[in-house]
Image (cartoon, rainbow, N blue to C red):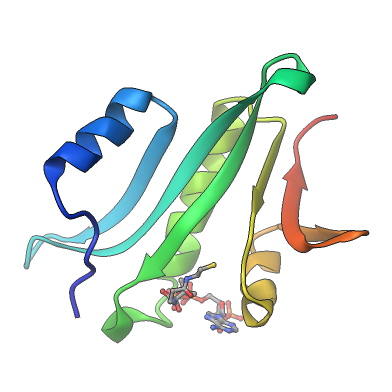
Length: 123
Ligand SMILES: CC(C)(COP(=O)(O)OP(=O)(O)OC[C@H]1O[C@@H](n2cnc3c(N)ncnc32)[C@H](O)[C@@H]1OP(=O)(O)O)[C@@H](O)C(=O)NCCC(=O)NCCS
């Protein structure tokens, strides 16, 4: 199954122009298809000295290739990139059954905010 990513290149251009979306993909170069993807979204926080908060969004792996660590690779790339871009924290929302998957990549549930997984890189 191929991933359906965007309906038009115009949409991708809009994301690119915003300069706050970093789309991370793994390509099967034999078939020229994208088999795994996620997006790191950066948000400037007005109440945090315009510090950068990162969010991991839209994590997906092509169905036939799940269980081969591609999900881990794209998310971990987003984590490394958010550190490099000096985010003070990185978070994501996920379904309950995926909490162990994200915990294995360093995300933690914060007390009182159990529906959000966070990595804090600084206060
Ligand atoms: C969730 C998803 C991205 C995981 O990608 P993947 O490439 O299959 O996962 P990986 O092979 O990198 O798995 C890494 C680890 O997470 C575990 N894991 C993966 N999917 C899991 C699931 N649904 N429930 C529990 N554990 C899971 C694996 O068992 C593996 O554990 P291990 O390191 O102990 O062996 C993929 O299943 C997917 O695209 N799902 C549909 C879209 C989706 O739900 N996205 C997440 C939105 S928050």
